[in-house]
Image (cartoon, rainbow, N blue to C red):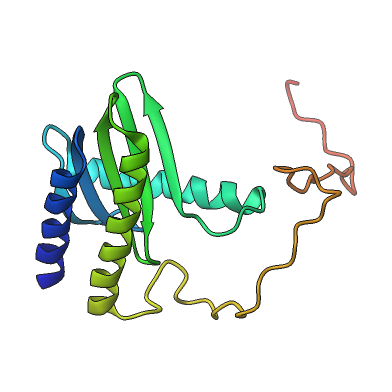
Length: 172
């Protein structure tokens, strides 16, 4: 349980460094709470929503050929929700008021995400992340995106005619 205590200490230090930070949560990429400092918010629900948005963010960065997920920022009418990668096994979500300094939020969120990644990896070891069952990717840089492919396009499946004619349904 030492990692949870260390992560909670990091979340509290983060709150002292970022004015107008309303709350913070560290969770696994699967949506399990590691530590939280989110008053007036259900941490388990926020962790589950973070995992869901993380999945969408991973797919978006893949589809747009933008590399690995780093961060996600959502702005609502009363503030921000910022999510930062914290290594391969954890994620950091911050809740901030609408008058927060977004640059400072990013700076400190990235730093805390890196610190939380160190704490979690020291406990679980490297390679225990989201795709631990897959072989590690090669160490060379990914190929440059195809300039002929418009950003965000996905392969399109063309419907084919069935090999047989469907039987007529009674009453229809």
